[in-house]
Length: 129
Image: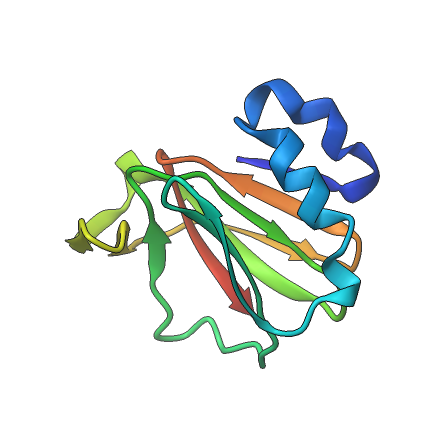
């Protein structure tokens, strides 16, 4: 997992395949309405609004195929992280490439202008207060 500010995103270009395609869309994030945007080759990004949720009862999520880049445009949240080998996997949907798990982890504050990048070995619990 990588946690940093958007001003440093280009430093991770070698760790994020197809960064050139993402940069084009990232530069327009503040202009785009809420929704899902297809990038091709099974990849997409979405712009979401929402309310944070309590830690109690929340589960980790994880992906086997795709890297998950989360960018905080406005507001703030907490995110919990743990290595996938250290959580208890509950279920996985191969078609949508999302699984859920429980366990202990590390809470991190995500502020406006920050991003985090999670790989298939990263269990993450976004959207917490």
